Length: 284
Image 1 (cartoon, rainbow, N blue to C red):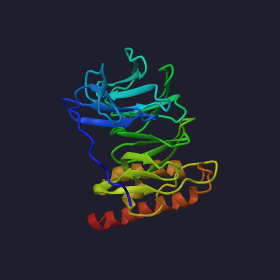
Image 2 (image 1 turned 135 degrees about the vertical axis):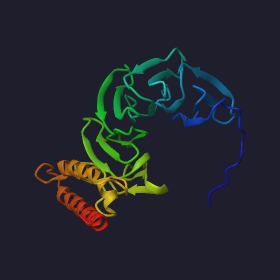
Image 3 (image 1 turned 90 degrees about the vertical axis):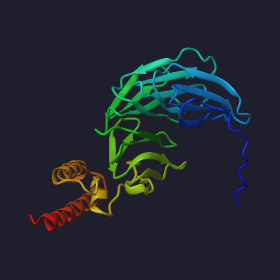
Image 4 (image 1 turned 90 degrees about the horizontal axis):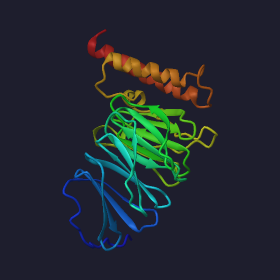
């Protein structure tokens, strides 16, 4: 039986809404981010305020602490990322490059790569030690609202409002697209990914492949709109575009992986189901 959680305290933390909370890996610091434009660092057990970090000019939307508990990355609606030393608390290094709110940050297990997502529709990879931009990954026109990295540091998941995309973190190659939405989280053994879904659902995605592909198996059964990664009320042009994009990604003439045929068959079935429904509703 799970032992009861006992209430300890509730310090007056911020003057605005709390947007993100995270512990340092060594367990010594609880960090909080807020719409009051600050990050605050708290003693784990006492709730004592140790430090307030001020530099952002708008809501702080996401924070992440490096595995060695030495660096904190903060993402803000002011379109910047700031890197803070948790030992010296010097003025932070500022990372610029996004043209929209920076909504999410994550740090890989080796502590050398920072990933950021933004409402500008991109995911960016940064060298955490130097602050240099490594690569920009095009993502969703509707914006990126969550990012997560697998425990082995191999796979990056980024999520918008309609799809979740998986990337090879080392190469930046896009691996697959899943019909889900933010937020996203990997299990500690990296074999399961959990994402948001339509109408309040939580989607649990299948185990990683044991081949060199090392990606999550995308959805190969279900409602046509889930397979195609569109909304239930998507129009004809939107569905056609989604189908063409998936076909370019999974057609066996292009994709030589062992599961490409199965995936393409599922995509074709979903598209046919849509066309039948469209014809029935519109008589065309």
